[in-house]
Image 1 (cartoon, rainbow, N blue to C red):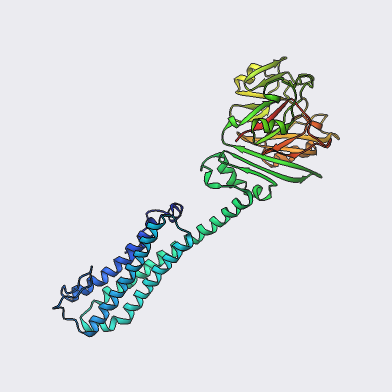
Image 2: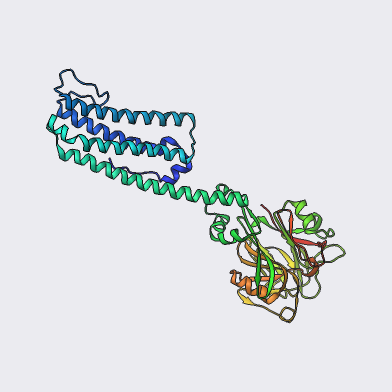
Length: 434
């Protein structure tokens, strides 16, 4: 009669199915009643029916025996009353609140406890009426105790589930996050579990089935700046986005691009030509690739093109690589970054420009791995930013365009405006879609 839960209680709670949740409890209680009745029936030489508890007219029951059997009859009536109540509840509403379920379970427990009292109270009288195997009765009592232990385990699991549900409800209420839509085993699901501290500290949060985004205010190395963390499920969600919908098609602000494209995250891209918005190929940048198309090729790379590959990884182009080399590596887009390379394969890569007092508004991207990257926006020293990104687990990092071009938009709302006071119209953007 010991309860064996073939299905985890947590799964039953998720289904909120009354029958599935309480069938084991009902079966255990009824089993006990029928065992008592069958024992009496044996002692009465078949004079008692386990199903109806009616008396055979020839049953040699004296007054004490009849009183005991009546007590057991009342017990079974109590069980039947609760079972009927459960059936009515199940038929009226398949999904019920947890507190209603707890109340029903508690009612069962009370009946079980009363049953123990009846046994202990009347055992002596029962022995006076008919010879009874006291060892067998003791077994019944032991089974009830085992049952109560199992119920205690269930109640603890239920408390844990309610507690966890309260935490989730609190997060949903605070951030509008519905975790039920997030599929287990995805990058976003892992990020939600791993970066719960970021969620708590975030001033702007976007968590959906396929996108995790937090924005934090960070103070590091004597600087205050914003850090946007982005994790998405699919590499196709990360895209090079040209101003006004086509490469070299003029200039546009980040807010306008976010509104036009519906992207959840939009940050400024690389250096550009003011005349048409195309990538600036002067100084150190030799190659430009936009969404799989080589749009400019001036020779082998000097290592300052910021690349996005087909798997969602980001890194600076290898020194000496040709445009075809990058395409063969799976690179789908590049940004013109001039002298902004800060981290290369886990190693600091500072040059003259970013080791001195090169401090003003900047957009710096640090890649942790496929579809997982941080964006720093703010007035910050490049070395401090690189050190911070290293602590966050980034192995590659580069500054994009800086100064008045610095801009970032999350869910159609600008989170950073450069010190000039307004967004600058620029040539391209790094965008993430949900």
